[in-house]
Image (cartoon, rainbow, N blue to C red; front, side, top):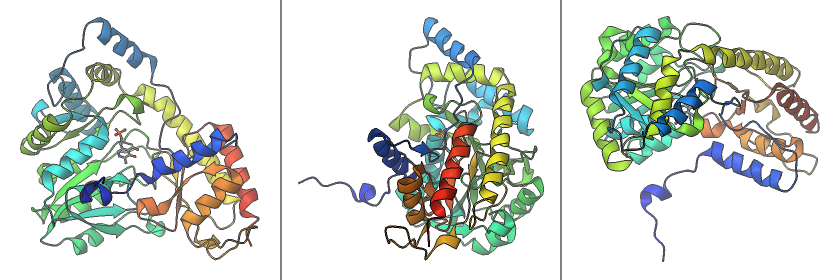
Length: 398
Ligand code: PLP
């Protein structure tokens, strides 16, 4: 008989991918499904980056690269940190990986021992919890409130830290809420972290460029905690390069070396051609992202307006990323035309898929079972149509 490992049996499939699968299955039956479940830019990768990949092939960049990435790419990442974040790193602090996802997993596996506690700011990105489980750690969820834009405060963090706390994880701008920590808020968090030298922080900044409030602040900018912080970033969102699979982290050199060791045994480096394309992306600066950010901002504003028209959706105003995350508890206890009771956001998401043919992800996957996440990285017409359909469907609930 087939026996899978306890590790795999304990792991959940990514809920965002599961919802996308269901939506695809409906679409295959000929249903006109609008999918707002995936966190993926609907933009093509900028042409100059594609050109660099073609050139890399022609120039013969087809061999294994150093495990943490080409030295010139790591240098360009250091230059990016200097330019965008006023952070000074050396190539020895940088590990390039197969997506920010692998950078996060490397850091978790390099730092967390079985039994360690990992504080995760909730709502959180789906994979954090499973990564911690894989490392044998226990997650401690700290839930932000809608009233505070879903942001966990320094005081709440301080109260949650124990001698067993090894790591703190968050994203800012946040997937799924779109909230962005200000420099001041991070300063208060830095003070708490500095008082707890046994704690490291994994700061996921992959949505850095998709920011509508203008200022991106990094926890590592606070000198007292720089060595405790691992900053993760990547190319999937800011440069619309999801399929290329490249991301990176910056950390003190011992942690970077640990991540390199782990990666050397599991995947080696990411694709050589992708690395050359990423180098060109960084050398081109961030102006290609600016064009996309304008579109994301316009869509956010449009969707917020459409959502205001839907009774029972309570939402914060996202400051970044490309999601909207309404609280939908107003619908709990209502009944569908076929007689089913809506008792959770998961039920409501399923009703919306079946009735409005709009796919979204229930907040349970992000540690927020009262909310639903809609991606706003879709064409304006699609977004408009989707929220009109949702409004019509929800009006059928009694
Ligand atoms: N971190 C967050 C918060 C994300 O939303 C995502 C992608 O959805 C990732 C990391 C992973 O990005 P990558 O494509 O670089 O692996």
